[in-house]
Image (cartoon, rainbow, N blue to C red):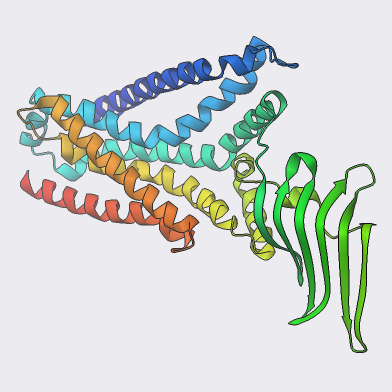
Length: 362
C-alpha cells in the first residue's frame, strides 16, 4: 500500500503543480498584454523590465496562486483519478480488499499539506507580496483616485464625522459635519460646505463653516468664511481601504478590523470577509479533494472528459454560491463569517454524504 500511497501523492502533486503553473503563465501573459501600455506607455516615470519582473510579477503570482489553488487541486484530482479509473487500475485496487477510507488517505494527507501551506501563505506571505505589488502600482500607475462617498464614521469615542464625499488626491471633502456627544447628549456640532487638509501645517481648513456648542447656559454659535483647526483624525481615515487590507498580515488586519468597528464604517464588512476567506479558502482544498475522488473514481462511457466536465460544473456551482453569500454579506443581510463559511459547510456535508455512499457501494 505504501507504493500506492507514494504513487498517488507524487501524481497528485505533479498534476496540481503543472496545472497551476500553466494557469499562472496564461494569467501573466494576459495581464502583461493588458498593461504593456501602462508599463512602457511613455509616462513620466516608467518601470524598468527588472522592476516589472521582480517588483510586480513575482508579487502578482502568489496572489493568484493562493486564489485559484483549491480549484486546481480539484481539477488535478479529477483528472488523474479519472485516468486511473479508465485504465481499470482502481478496480484492481478495490478488488485487493483495500477499503475506500484507506484509499482516501494519501489524497487527504496531500490536500492537507497543501491546505496548511495555503493557510500560512494567505495569512502572512501573500499580504507581504500584495504590499510590494500595490506599492509598485501606486508608484507607476498612480493607485486609486476614486472618491469616497457618503462617509459616516466614528473617529473617537462619542465623535462622529459625516461627509457627502471625499477626494483622497486633493484632501478635499464636501458637506462636512462633525458631532460630539457626551453619553447620548449632543455637546458640539460643526458644519462646513467644504473641508481641506494642509499636509504641511497638518491642520484642517473649514470653508463656510458654523460651530454650535451646547451648554447648560444655552447655545453658543460661531460662523465664518474660513477657519483653520485641528480635529482628532487625518485624511487616511477617509481613503478607500479595500485594496489596502489585502496588504495586511492577519494580526495587523485583526487590529484594523477592531478599530474600524469602533469607527462605525460599513466597509468593515468587506474587511471581515477578507479575514475569514483567508482560512476558508485554504480549508476548501480538503472539501474539493473529498468531492473530486468519488466523482472521478468510476469508469464511465464519456471517459476523463466527462469526469472533468462534471467536476468543473460542481466547482463553478461552489464559486457561484460563494459569490452570492459574499454579496449578501457586503449588503449586511448576513454576518460575514456565515457568508464565507456557509458554502464550505453545505458542500462539506454533501461531500461527506457522497463519500459514505460511494464507500458503501465498493
